[in-house]
Length: 457
Image 1 (cartoon, one colour):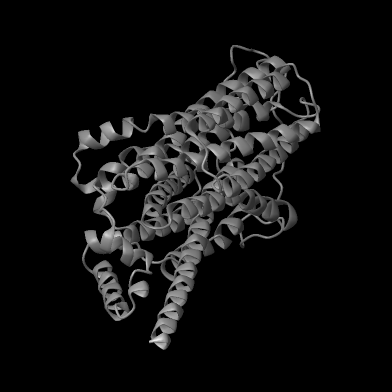
Image 2: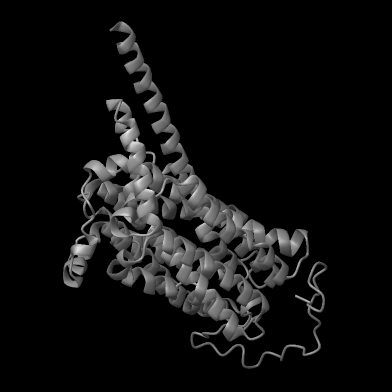
């Protein structure tokens, strides 16, 4: 009898270790999925001048508007496509984007390629946020947020590496990036435990996954402790099924409106920080009239911002704060917008402004991860999948508003500060560019050292 008790305790200990290994594997998978989902999206923004040099803001809009379309409509059609199907769709869109942007000759076609990865990013983010509800949501959401934060750092580093260190053309940079969709599929299929909801909603391969899990569960029934150890099996056995598929369009929309305490802070913080990034910082430099100085400030300020996002998205989910604390984030971000707006318009400051640029990233990353963690803990488990999918539209709305506003902000700053080169798309009523001499037509474009035969980059 004592031996039986000892054996039972040993089995229980082994079951707990196995559960910890499964959880660690799922958390690691979500980190990698976050990184890979956002990597190409960031690379498109970083290489905007190579895609459509005469209108950087147009590239930013092409890289976000399809994401908004996905997030607005996702709650009404996602449940018809398995998570596995959405992951494969994302991989195909990644490949299509890289190939089209690299080899298309017209800006319009290149922008179409950018729009494809924006659609992919929306599908990936909305799907992974919702899928986290079928695992340890707090840890997986924190890991996803950290991975997306690191994508910003790595994406800009990737661009700097190829353009400055290697001196490679844009086509080489994009073609080397074809490893990303492959890694995306490997992580989902090899690292992540299959989402149990697919086996409930769909037949075919997903049903086979559920069948294998059921066999495993039957084999483990000899030990009561071991039988309940698998996250997916436990979910299949006892947790409430999501109600997404059972709700009408009106019911889903009404439910989405109840998420405003989490969505409004997301909207405000993203609108503020993207106006700072793509609008205010484009009109700053030391001195501001020097084009290279402005480019240098813009590049390093955005890189520092990405570092702040990574730090806060990695650490911001370790604790769960209150809703009032969540709202403090966008309030402080609006203050930062006013601060940088004044610094650009007066102008004042110098490279020490890199420090508050870090704070802009810290605030944005904090609000992102806290909003989704709070949703996963405060919303009824049957509605969490729908809630996480629906709430993600708020930040996209903020980014689109910011991108449009930034075109106007940049034009007004350039006019106020007498910045002649280049002439902005929006002139804010200033006519200082009318008398400017025409750009020389004989300028020779720099030729990349590393490129494909017959391509100058």
